[in-house]
Image 1 (cartoon, one colour):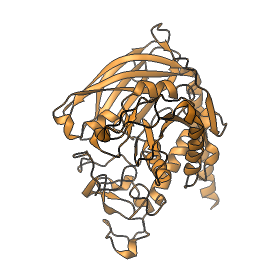
Image 2 (cartoon, one colour):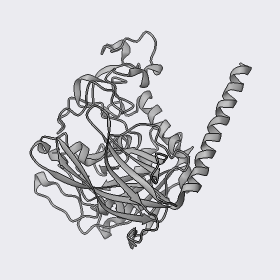
Image 3 (cartoon, one colour):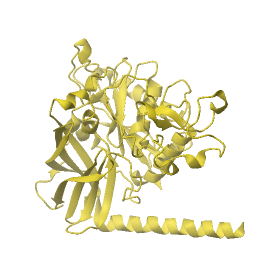
Image 4 (spheres, one colour):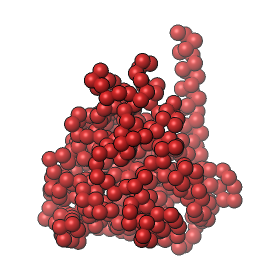
Length: 428
C-alpha cells in the first residue's frame, strides 16, 4: 500500500509539473486577449474548401491556460497553432461545425453551400502559423488551410463595441479555472428581456440538476448577454413563420422540423465575444420542441416546451462533452453519418473497432459484448446495438440515457465520466 501511495505521489507531482510547464508556456506565447479567426467553408457532399474572412481581437481569453494542446482527439475538425516556420505546436483544438453535418444530407449531393465559421485561440505574442484540418470518412487528418498570423498586423480588427449589458447568472471564478458559458438570447424583444432573465435562471437550475454538474457546480461561470430582438419568437419555415431576431435561429435546419440552429455565425460570435467564454448556449423564446448542439461550436434550445430542461442538458452534452446521440429510430436528415470501419470519436459510441479505448474498463467481466437487450442487463453498463442514427453496427453503453431518451432523466455512468473529464480538462 505504501509503495502504491508513493507511486501516486510521483504521478501527481509529474502532472502538476506538466501543468506548470503549460502555464509557463502560455505566458511565453500568449497574451490575455483572444483572437477570433472568421473563415468560410464551402462545398458539397464530395468537396470542401476554406477561405479566410477576417481576424478579430477580443478582450479576454476565457479558455484553459494549462491544457493548451488538445489531447482528447474529439471532433471532425482540428486547428493547430504553430511557431512560425516550425512544427512546434503551441495550441490546438478539435471541433465540429454545421457544414460537416450538412455534407451528410441529401441536399449536399446536388447543391454547393457556403458557411461562415470561427475558431478562437489565445492572442499570440509572436508570428504563428494556424493550420486547419478536417477528418475524412476514414478518420485521416487532411490539411485544408494554412495561415500566417502576425499579431501586429493592422488589419486585425478590434471587436465590435456593442451596447448590451451582461448578466451574471452563476459564478465569479477566474476564467482559466472555470468552464465559462455565455448565454445568448434569440427572439426576446426589449419588453421580454425580463423573461430572458428568468429563462437564464431556468438554464442554471436545469444544468445543476444533473450529475456530474451538481458535484462540479463551483467550477462554472454562466454569463448572459442582454441583446434584444426586433421580433418575438424565432423562424419556423415549415409554417411560413419568419422572424427578425438577434442571432437568427430557425427550426427546420436541414429540413428537420425540430432541429433549430443558426447560419448567422457573425452575430453569434460578436455577442459571445463580449465576455470570456468556452461554450456558447443560445436560448430561443419559443414553446416549440427542439434545439441542437455541436461540439465546440454552439448549442440551442427552446425554453417553453415541457421537455426544455431535458433538451438543455442533452444539447449541452453534445456541445460541451462531445457526446453522440444514442438514438437510431428517429427520422433524421443524415445519411451514412458514421463509418462502421473505424471507431467514432464520441466517448459514448463504439463500432467495436477499438472498444478498448472506450468504456470496456467500466464493464463487468461477465457482461457479454455485444450485450443482449435482456432484463438482466437493464441497469448494467454494456454494449447495446443501436446508436448514432444507426440501428446496426453502432453501439451505446446502456439501454437508456439522456443521450437516447428522456425517460430515465439521467446520464449513464459512461456519459457522466466523459462530462467529468471535460470539466476537469477546462479547469485543472
